[in-house]
Picture 1 (tube, rainbow, N blue to C red):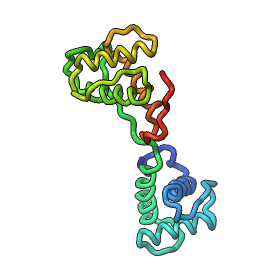
Picture 2 (cartoon, helix red, strand yellow):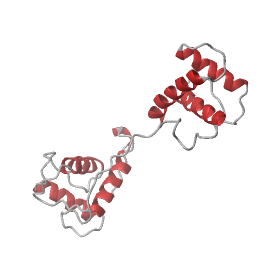
Picture 3 (cartoon, rainbow, N blue to C red):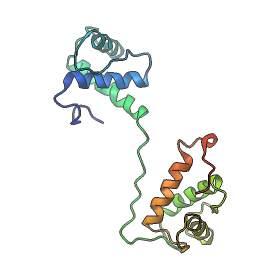
Picture 4 (cartoon, helix red, strand yellow):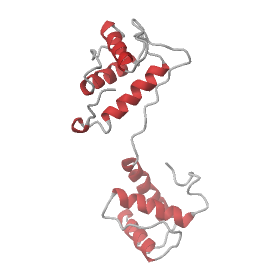
Length: 185
């Protein structure tokens, strides 16, 4: 996210500065916390001076161009750490399906999600991670379809992809095995 080009920051320089300082402080607790109130007061000046010191700039507490750029850079680094990971957008064309024997690069990802769901939900069959839409993969797709009350075609279409990816996200959360949900779908 580039604060120099983000519409949320344009025309609100003090609030934008304070918002960036707050994000930086949220990620790095040694930084002074600022409340984005739009007033360039003592707390803002202290937080700016702190960032100036970190960037090797004169500690004036005044935001000049070099200070703004240093704070923008620190903000961009901090926001990566505090925002959720970028989602994986898999492209499936209209009416596209993945069925047994399909040569599709998404199969390995599908197999990994099915295998993970198998570890979390006892009623979902697992499959080997081969990258090929083989008989075991089709059986795992059918078992997921069965558990979800869908026709057991063994074919993965966009509707099943939405269900599979949603269940995967719900079951795995942050990926920590200790916090997996173990309820059946």
